[in-house]
Amino acid sequence: MRVHKETPFILLPVVLVLVVVLFIISSLSGSSVLVFLFAMILSLAILSFVYLKYQHDKVSWSIKKYQDSSSIDETFKCYIEVTNDSALPLYHLKLNIESRSDKELVFIDNERESSILSMVMDLPAKSQKTIVVMMKGKSRGNHQWSNFEFLVRDPLILQSFRLEFDDLPQFKVIPRILKLNDLKLKSLLQGYKQTNSSLYMDEASIIGTKDYENESFRHIHWLATAKENKLLAKKYQKVHGDVYSIFLNIVGAGQFHLRKDMEELIEYAVSVCLYLIKEGCKVELWVNYSTEQNGILKLENDLDRSQVKKIIGTLAMIHTNGVFFSTERFFQYSLRKKDSKSLGLIIGTPPVPNRRDQLLHIKQ
Image (tube, rainbow, N blue to C red; front, top):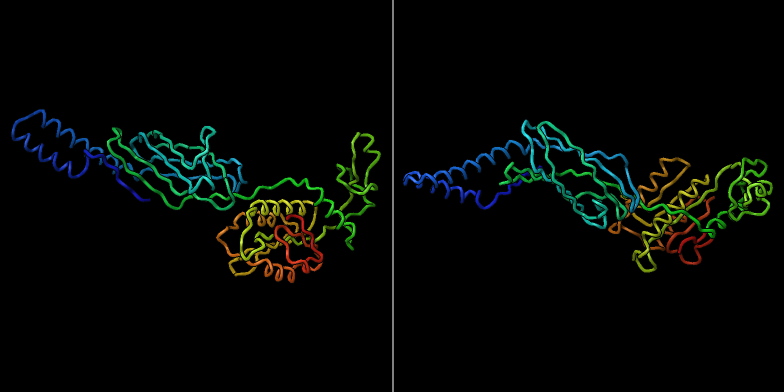
């Protein structure tokens, strides 16, 4: 905690020295009015300083967050508990919080969005108050407040101590998860399932019905369709999932130029991963981004919910100031290392045509 004293002109040390000199002169000259006036100024200055000196280190705070992350443009809450450990009350205590940018994190107050939040409160002696702070993430990443401070004032608001705090909390904002209504993607994946050497579903084991999603006519459950008056398809027992390798390349055609639709590509990649995992598929994700070990970022998923969380959290941390590879080097390495049984799905800039065997370009 850093403490900064904010003093008005009349209570500056130079002015107080002058007041003391005038007080002595007035006492010697017998001017009782001036003596009373200067004595009051000195008394208020001393009482204000003693009060603030005693009170400023009695203020403490803590924060509670009940969710680890939020999505872009999703409103979430955190709770700040402000405590007055003093035997004296605190009046006009002002809290100021500021985010680094309104493009990262904003506060919502009376349906207005701002990068600054200010509020004034009174705290009785030995008391605690909980403040609900509404926020919204405007972009991916780990965002942090740039400033958190209290202004502790004396009861007459003559002067104040500004208390600045470090070690501020971070708020993780993850990419949006889109609802995939792309029939082209679904038909591509279904076509791969039907031509793949291993069966995806056991057609001899019908476990129910589901909405028709452009499957083959033989999959339509005609009896259920007639009963419900809408197209329903047979839902089969899954034997095992397929294997997919997703290649997310946010580098453009030139050398190391990031694409302008980088955010859209990241959101689409997250959504495709979750869609495939939900369908029981095994997914490995390759991202044109350097890890701490200077290798290409690779994330595997083996039908584990913790790995799903890892995929979303890792893609949220991709930053434009990171290290990227050329498109040629990215695909040269990742295609050589990918699962030999997987079908490759390209999101973003594709490789040169002679490297596109067994690859589907699902997002330009």
